[in-house]
Length: 201
Image: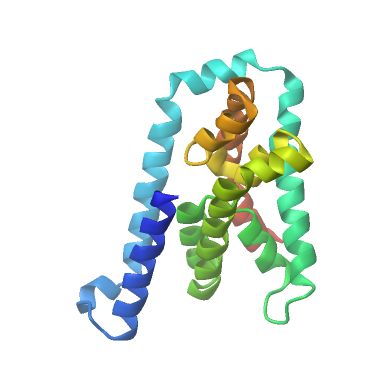
């Protein structure tokens, strides 16, 4: 929760600074977001590649566990597609691109800003932050009424890190392993799916 609040605070400061022209001109260069994306992708690669435990988990788990991230993907994309039918200014392609962030707000919002527009990037940032916050606050109820996999599904890509502690607390360590696996798969797929949806659909 603390991390999400800090992210929102930085976003608010940047937004207000941009509105009132408080930042130097060089900071408004759009190429900076591209460079930030390169650095972020590099750090994500290092994070996943250096996590030996992640590869151990992949070898240890039953093949059926692949159904967990698969259902998160289907549910997120289908859900955002349905929601888009109720919105006048966002079409199915745009909505599913936001949904394909799977809670990974930093990466998905930069990708969407680069491939589509800054406006949709902001929507992706906020919706995926809200997904994380809802997971952090709602896991007890999700587990109680929908089963132990519901918290993992809600967390999406964040189930491998920021929402993992609360998922483990209310489901158990064995489900923590599934959460990490699902989070890793979804994290890897975010840039791929967002690009495919916006560029090739």
